[in-house]
Length: 104
Image (cartoon, rainbow, N blue to C red):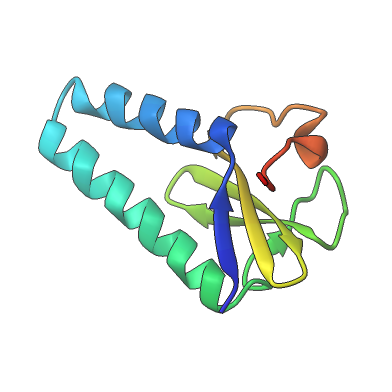
């Protein structure tokens, strides 16, 4: 099982998603975030589960799709760094492959 580390940028994305959904339904927002976390738990068990991010073609930069959201992560040995959780309609930043996640 891989160690999962959430980058600050990904946590901010998750909070923003929860706040947006929570405007209409706090209960659904909480459940939605829990399901995203469940998807990340599956990645911890099977790091190569997701596809490579098409825009970058880096074998270690991958994503899993959850509903309309892309959960982008980087594999580094036995660790997985979650770098972003973005709506599929949003472009990924050009520097996403370089976002820090491996905190000391």
